[in-house]
Length: 345
Image 1 (cartoon, one colour):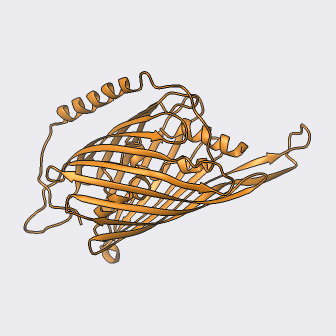
Image 2 (tube, one colour):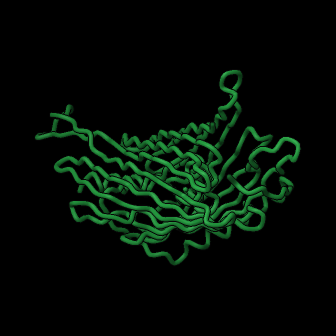
């Protein structure tokens, strides 16, 4: 349908995913900068030889990635998968949630398309259950003749509501899944469907190295259009702060480098993602990433982001606030901005 083609083109152009005690580590700023440069330079060569073909699918809004933090790292998160944002990227990563986490994101895209993502996760023994809502909407104009003002306008788009569960099979290995109901309101017809996501994550080397794999959007629409089904694989290496034996707390992220590959099953060609994140004084995070592919609507380009987290005061002392922002520049079609709030409690 026409709106699917519009959404898919915009998405492809603008969008570029109780822990174990862990060991500490330290890298100098110069060394971290060198590693980031090597990752970005090496990854640039991966895109060579990728075909330049692309297809369209139904429910194209499912391609809009959830969360600001992962997008700030170039869309590489399947191997890191360590907060509630992973409910979109790799449901197995939900086992990193210690108690409860809630996130809400607003994404400002081109062509007046607005997308939202809401996710919630809560621990239950060795498992974690969650719920999510992903949607994208825009307004289109109707005209029967060439006039300055439209005859009427109509809101089109779609949303997907999901329920997730993840379980730690071993201390190092988690598996998870998400079941989604899909509703899409188009200009001339509505469509409905269902999909599932499946994922797994392996954390080794004292939880420093993460290896993740997920299958996304495996399902159907009643219009018999294909969903944007794809396989995501990724790795992440992170250094984390040491857990204090006197006042033990959940280990905090310190520095991470990440790399993902996103392989569409129904259409298109692989997209490669690399990125890095560094937290300063457990308060401020800086993120950078690069996404690359070839085809009709490539996702090539740098992304960046910041994060700020603080503990609540007085009556809010059990709340941990985290604000994330991601910037996706694109000189051809316009810049995209994402703003997220994440609560831990």
